[in-house]
Amino acid sequence: MSEKVWLVSFDTDRIKDYVFATSDLKKIRGASALLEELNKEKTLGKIREIYPDLPDEYIIVGGGVAMTIV
Image (cartoon, rainbow, N blue to C red; front, top):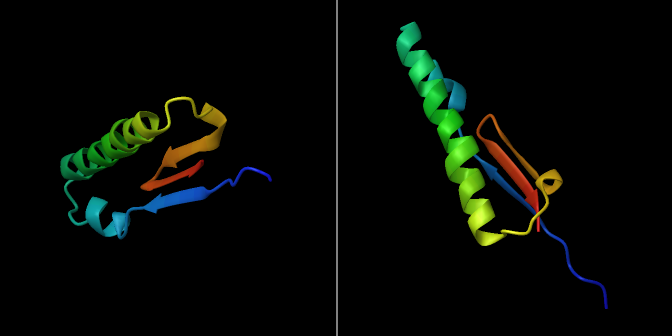
């Protein structure tokens, strides 16, 4: 019997509405920085916590979207 493989996808809805809710450049940059933290630190950290041995090639994180093969 072969091992099952799953594609898991996460998506943050309405990112453009969040980032561009204001025309204030500092606030736009701040919102972008928060999304970057969510993507690169929080989401990736949680995936690594659950699947510590998962190869980097199996994880895509960015732009409010994360996908991984598990």
